[in-house]
Length: 217
Image (cartoon, rainbow, N blue to C red; front, side, top):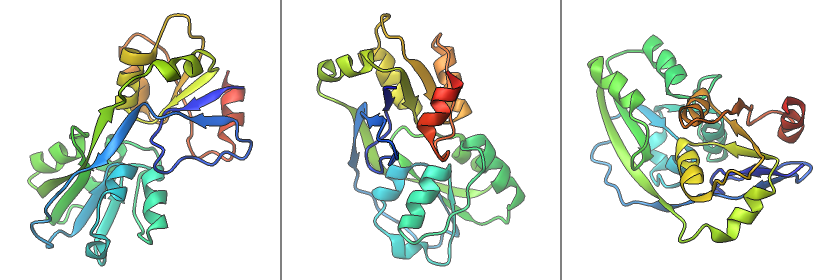
């Protein structure tokens, strides 16, 4: 089975059977930022790139660290940082965790340009002291012609961000593709559905993701 993972290749998944091919649909570049204060008590990382392009790991000592999902949590652990994250990835579930731990503290959300605003808006609306730090940007590839043929041969395509979905349907998709779409969160699946297509949920950290995909088809 030909499976393509469109996620960032910053921390590509190691599939035991090498049956999953990683073909990112966009590039990521670090952005300069200024950490104005170190008085934050809670740090929230929204994605793997937000961890990679954040340079102040010493600052995280003695802080409450959160991540949007398991992939980011695992990447943080590689840096020696323990983070709390929801069992189901996404803003909605993370907000539930934050709602239980409200102590009128100071929050910093580390994210990419044009990243999700749900957690920031929730904290702001509930009177919390919260700021955002933008440490990377995403941008399209110069051309998609060379990779279109790979996607035409795909049996399954995994999306780990709504931006990847957006790029795919604008730059790569054609009606003759027969691949089944998979999203790693309910938000991504809904985004695909709103575009007029169907998608299935896949546990990105299942013991054998390729086998899980085969069983769901």
